[in-house]
Amino acid sequence: MHIFAIANQKGGVGKTTTTVNLAAALAAAGQRTLLVDLDPQGNATMGSGIDKRALTNTVYQVLLGLATLAQARAVSPSGGFDLLPANRDLAGAEVEMVDLERREMRLKEALANHVADYDFVLIDCPPSLSLLTLNGLCAAHGVVIPMQCEYYALEGLSDLVNTIKKVHANLNRELKIIGLLRVMFDPRATLGHQVSAELEQHFGDKVFKTVVPRNVRLAEAPSYGVPGVLFDKASKGAQAYYAFANEMIERLKTI
Image (cartoon, helix red, strand yellow):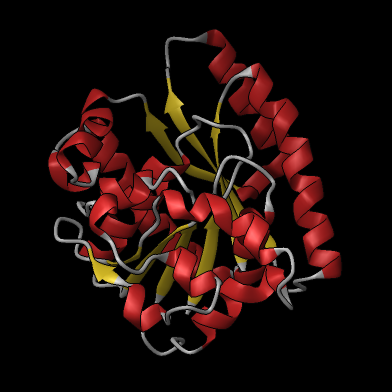
């Protein structure tokens, strides 16, 4: 079982879009996939076709030990993967987890009983370096960082890399950066090409070859509760995420 956190503390960089579409593309490729929604906004849950308001058990109950992962998971009706969903309850988890033993390991321990169930577990982390994100990083074997190719993105990246190094040193020796994925790419913008070149220069083969373009169909898909790769398979965005899923599967052979 390969566990990946999709993380970037900057908001609006396509973390949830990447997690949902990668999960659906991996499931379409025959991989047994679980998506863990660790964001209290529950966008990955809604984007997977599940109504977050109608849930009894979510990742919140799992983290607090009130339900098992098996009791809380659901199947995405549109995506064909399993989902550990989230809703607003999760916002209170941070405060309630402060007094718990091994509070940053709660997700890791919940996943440990399901090693044989999945080929991939993808964790959609919230846009902050919080206790929830820390649970995602402690549970993961690697981090996939979606990035927009703009100036501010580079600034935030160094903070994230430092956090990953600290987690690796103190809490999770397995954690490493699997790769950086360039998303929402606009080929007409000169700055985008400059930042992209800088990333390749600095991170080398850690930068995925796949580049996900800005795409209207990907943006429309969540409102229908369908992953973009299934909403319009022929769109450039969908094709990019299918290519990314294949690249992920290939990259694992060399890790």
